[in-house]
Amino acid sequence: MNQPLDITNFLAPFQCLAERCEDTCCKGWGMQVDVATRDKYAKDAPELLEAVDTGESEFIMRRDPQTDYCVRFEGGLCGVHRDYGTSFLGDACHFYPRISRQLGNHASMTASLSCPEVTRLALFSEPTVSWQASKTDRLPYSLKDYLPEGLSSEQAWKIHTTCVDFAGNAELSPEQLIACFVSVAASLERQPLASWPDAIAFYLRMAPGRLPTPESQAADPFNLLHMMYGLLGAAKPTARPRLMETLQTIADALHVSYQPEAAAIVLEDDSTTRWMMIEQLWSMNGAPTYAPILRRWVQTQLTMMLFPFAGFGASLSQRAVLLGVRFAITRLALMCAYFTHDASLSAEMIVRIVQSLSRFLDHLADPTLCLRICEETGWVRESRLRALVGDTGQSIPLSASFLTLGVAN
Image 1 (cartoon, rainbow, N blue to C red):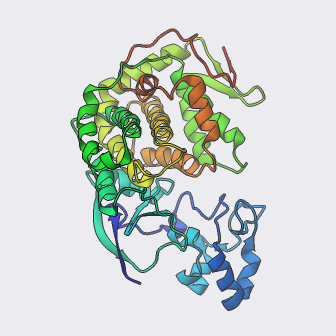
Image 2: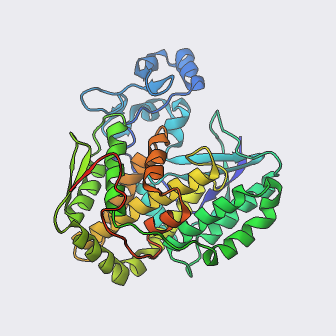
Image 3: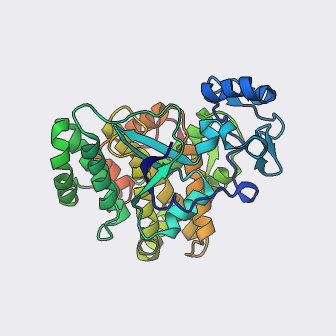
């Protein structure tokens, strides 16, 4: 097999760091074993069946209950890969952090920012994210086709690449770009699918001038942090030290604390003042400095979503809302770290923040709770979401609209 496909430019130089990785995918995850690989073990290497368990999916690689590492993780390396070769790796282990997509007869491959090395390459190695022609000798056994009925592969791919290219527009801030994609998603949903190939460029071009007035609420940054703690509480328990460090940085910068017993965020007397200071410092210095990083983040997310055809959520509007909320929490984390570390962010700090959030948010099993929170806070409305992502707007009193999950003053 030597199938042509398009890959993102930052994926081309990617190589797994193996024992040098600071947050290995071999720990804390139930890496799926597809049926074909499980059958291969039974036929060609029955001793490997001892490493296969059931859990989050029909078959997964078994983890050591004491360390939470895969039982085949040895000395920083995958023992299956080392001793048996890549043909014995299931799709999940073989391809991660790569993400394969299919649009009819068109295949593409990008990668998730949940991998530290991918985050470095995606955010720092190229001035912009783009697609390039490549070939592969293996695709996943089960590769979902996202081509909607009524479009050709060429039409759908052109729609997607038009969106990715638009997100590289340096004349728009990353915040404006997110607001534009939320607006375009709503517009596309109101149009018949057959019109999308001709409409997409027009909608993108017109979006900056058609955005609703941002409806800001001063509770938003606190609600974003509260959302993350709520999602963590609902997720499968496992150690997440890098993510907890990121969330603690936000809490420290905002002068808030989280009470897990009450599922509540507790504000100090100066919490709102601190947020105003963080916003002011970021708008003066941080935003222009780190706009290229956030712009590449947006482009990478679009490639992962194969926007507008895939991603979390049952509808395009839901997927756009979740994109906006994920951008907002990532931006908030960078802003708070920038404030806490004397108006400076190192490359490694940015990688840790972005990757730790992506490792959790990229792999949520179900977006239902996150969408419910978005509805409760009003973030499903374009005007609210535009303000949430930081695309300008005046704050209203803090007493308005905290999460009903419980916030204490």
